[in-house]
Image 1 (cartoon, rainbow, N blue to C red):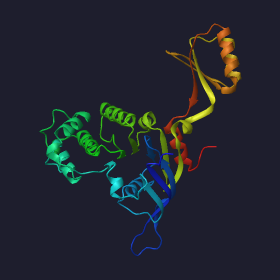
Image 2: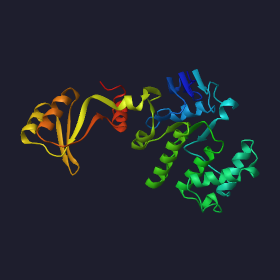
Image 3: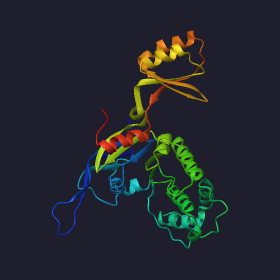
Image 4: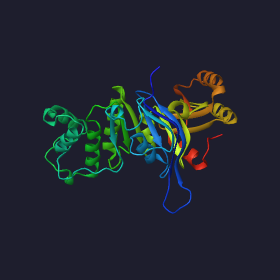
Length: 311
C-alpha cells in the first residue's frame, strides 16, 4: 500500500493575542489524506483556515496538537522539502530581475548550479508561456505574468508534490486554461497537486479529491466523483417527445427542458428501463443517457451555508 503524500491527523492550531483570555481556533481537529498522483482541491471561504493549514503543511507554523506528515516526514523536514514545489497566494519576487535570472537565483537557493540550468530554465519559460519576455524585468510584468513566473519557480526542482495557493489568480480566461492544462499534464506525469482556489468550476474539471473546511473545521473530504454523484436520477436527451410521453414523464416526477441540442429529461434512476423502452417504442432517437450529478459549487455553497452535510 502506498504511503499518503499528505496526512493530517487531528490537527489543531489556535492563535493567542497578548493580554487577552482564550484564543482564536484557526484549525480544529482536521484529518484527511492525499494519495500519490492525486490532484486535491483544498476549499473553504475566506477565514476558513486554509492558509494556516498550508503554512503548517510547509513547516512555517507548528500545530498545537495532532500530526502532519509529508511523504511520511514531519513538515519542514529537508527530505520532504526537497520534493515540494510551493506557490503562495501572496508572493513577492525581486522585481529588478528578469524571469530567467529569478529562476537562476531560486536554483542557487536550492543548492543547484545555475550556470548548468540553461535548458531547464528555457523549458520552464516556454511551459508557462513567457517566451519572448526573457529580457523584461519583473517590475514590468502584468499580474498574470507574475503568476506564471511563480508557477515556473514552483516547478524548478521537478517536485513530486506541488502546493499551490490560488494558482490562477490574476490570469485571464486563456491564461487560466493554460494553467489548468499544465496541471493536467503534471497529473499525467504522476505528480501530486494540492491546490486552493475560489474558482470552483475549474477545480471540478481537474481534481480527483476535495477537502472542504469552514470556520477551522473539516466539513467534507472525499473523492470528487463520489461527492458530486446524486445516484438517484438520470438525464436522457432525445430528439423528439410526444405529448403522451411528456405527460407520463411529468406525472412520474421528471423535469423536461428543450434546447437546440435536444430535449433533456431528468427522471428517477429507477424508471430508466421503462423510460428507455417507451422512448424507443415511440421512435425517439436517444442522443445520450447520463447519471445526474450536482456541481462542486452547489455542494460547496450548501455545505458552507448550512455548516453541515446535506440530508
